[in-house]
Image (cartoon, rainbow, N blue to C red):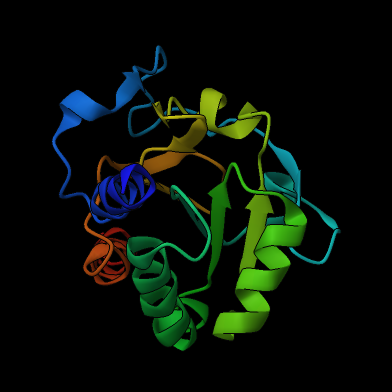
Length: 183
């Protein structure tokens, strides 16, 4: 019974429906603002190859942090990005998902759900820390807050969204790219 309670609370937390008093949140100390230089990163993707921000100079970069592979909210978010991937590519943008999960976990998630964009493994929270993404702990599990960063083709922060809605995130970011491009 206790195990089922923890599973239920974790599921609710991943969907963003759980009250915060059952989760320990570690506030971030970095608050990136539009115009700031985007922090560099070099993380392994689901296929084990290293991916860095510098690889995408000249492209828009959508860097979204999410809590956990294969959880309900994260699966919804990944599927909306996957379905909009042709629109991102047409806008000269690349989508990169980041979580504390391992590259092997990402590979399984991508295979199971048909995801073709890069998921980056950040088990030591190096990128999350650099981007000021708060971490949360539930029981013995640690995970990132659901935050998204839009990075300009010249490597600056264009926009930051905190605690995003997994269903709406992709569409909101696409609209932001269009708005920034048409300025």
